[in-house]
Image (cartoon, rainbow, N blue to C red; front, side, top):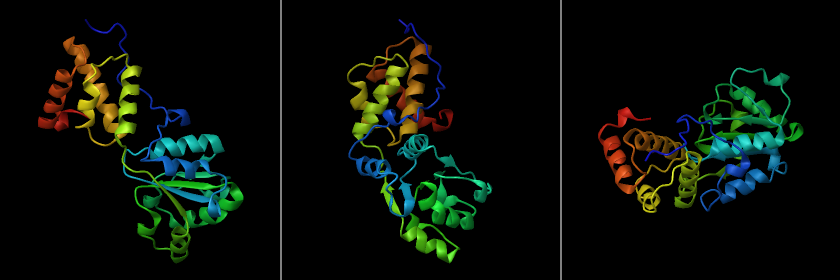
Length: 220
């Protein structure tokens, strides 16, 4: 039988701090973020690969600190901190970034996210290089099995899915190490199970993964 409650496939992602799952892969980075406002020099770089939870953790901090998220092209001289800059390694205005780093101790702090550590950024402003080299770095690793497992179970609960016991171990051995990938796959499992009027079992999940591997462009 189909599940009685059908939830929408497109759900707003929660970036509440309580929804951020902590494990060995991110525990030290979480500790450093939570040490605000006592960051050395008022700055912290939150670095990690795509899907590691940078945006989730950064936006949760921004709510806690009442921080302003700075967008490319904004007049930073008119803004008051604390500040958040996402994807700072691709920030187009390095002069503005330099000035925000200098203001951070007086404005309540500056958190920026990036995939690379600041020492690896391509920098054209000499004074910015010295500032970046001195900034404390909080590194997030790719999600481990503990994080992915808890995320997948949470996504199943949100969609009123009760998978068989062998589904989660099966998924953890095969899924991309990324929270967005887990979210997309659970949505696809939900859609397929409803369309085919089938329970969420290992057989169904195997079928979905095999089809996705053969025709990846069909899926998000």
